[in-house]
Amino acid sequence: MRIFDHFLADPLTVREEGLAAPYIDWEGHDGQVYKRVCLTAVPGLQECIEAEIGPVDMLGMGYRLNFAGELPNAAIHSDLGWGTHALVLYLCDGVGGTAFWRHKATGATRIDPGDFDLWQAVKGDWDNEDAWDQIGLCEMQFNRAVIYEGANFHSRYPFAAFGTGPEDGRLIAVAFFTPRK
Image (tube, rainbow, N blue to C red; front, side):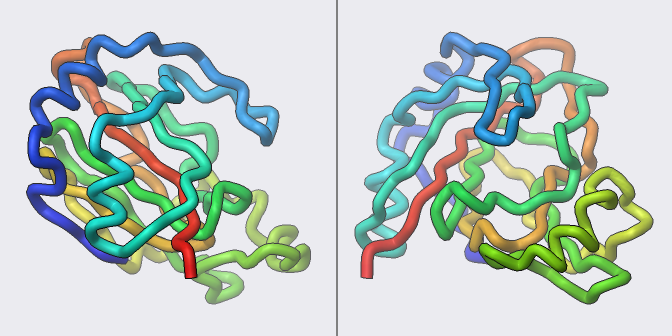
């Protein structure tokens, strides 16, 4: 996990674009429907990622906006299938942030492609916080970004979002990518 404060040069403009974005309830490749997603290029995001870690192959990016009481599809999860790395950029302030987890029964902190046995062991525990130990937290702060390996078990934390509308809801930009060698 790498944390970057003051990530974008003009975060207020990107926030305004995020607030005005056309959101949909998006059906992902896993068959789950994700609330308030806007799959679009986020201005300056790829350039800032590449300035920090070098060239990347971008697999997807966009905005996500959630409100009070809304829970994630799978609270604790990994981003397998979306490249090797992910970025969360906070476009708001709020409580919590992005948490990283260890599965108590297996000791696993990540799941690698093809590890079917581990998948079977953890798949019933995505929404059971008691089955996990939190081992890290990137605290939410406006214009802070966290980059991590997508195979790591992670979640937003707390699981429930906040706010009553776009101006005070949980607004983030996300990106999924693989660094070029």
